[in-house]
Image: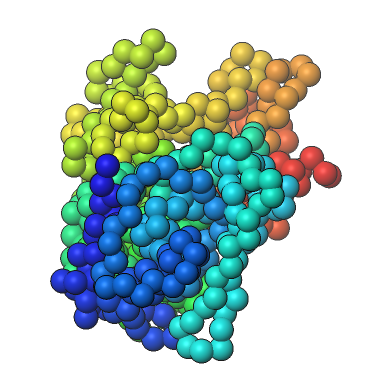
Length: 470
């Protein structure tokens, strides 16, 4: 089996050798320089010695390997390491530097890693030294043909390792780039951590397009705004809740053509604002789908489908099914099922945990997750509806709902809000008027801010743990 990303690297190193591949605070790197460094790094780390042969290097056989673990940072060093792992065919278990040790240990054991990568920055510009520390004894697990392993723990905290093969990453990048009109002359900003599929996909999309990957110094709103303006960024990905903060720094950089929104549901009260920004593109996807599988410009669907999350990408089919697995007519609500070349299953079909519908124009609407439904006293309460009502009240800046067991009612919703600008009783009255007494949470907790993950999503596990400690 051929690895399309490995073959693409050889193509870029020869036909696009002088094009700029990476831009960072240390300067710019051409495709030839990037891939030469990746080739040397692959030999040093994974093959036991420097590579001194002809360039481009020969392609190694595409066979299963045991994964190694690495902190996926937003740095040129990590980008070089990622492409080195592709050349060597070594899967990387990607994690964030802020992952708690216990969680990281569970992920490493579940992934079956045999070593841990770390690096020290050298004093020389654009140089770094990587170390591969073997694990003794190594974790036992079947070897993998995946390029990346990403942990998605969900609310349960139990590790679920998603193995993402190179062909799926390539197929996703081709389709997303086509939908978003990414070309050789574009510039993708690495605005999400690559330990998540959204950030890793940016690195791959830039290589597939043959365009520049811009690496900011950090992910502060002011930093990514400055990087977008300075380096004429055309495409960047943001969590919806970050867009307002991004624009609060300054006006939209003139070079920006697309802000790809994803990672969290957009509250109804925020959609009108985002739809007024021509660059905003909504999307839907998951780690299991190798990133985005549907997208659309908000301003184009705002009048006919204001709550939609997009139209399927090329070669992608979205079905809505009932509890028996039967497809339902358009407009009816059910479980979202996706089929296509980017889906990481044997049959190319992924049944999500999300509920939604497809309208007559083919736009996908996501109502919420199955586990978002709280049954309290026989009454179904959807957490997303409660969040929408809270934010639409204009009295809070952020909100989240968690379900909790209740001795009398079975389950109950707990509403967490931040930025409350009125007495709690006033918010409760407005929620009753909007939701009715039976859907209004009896427990509302006011917090200074809601905890968020590395990419800006609300961290439900951290929120639940903090609440239980009170």
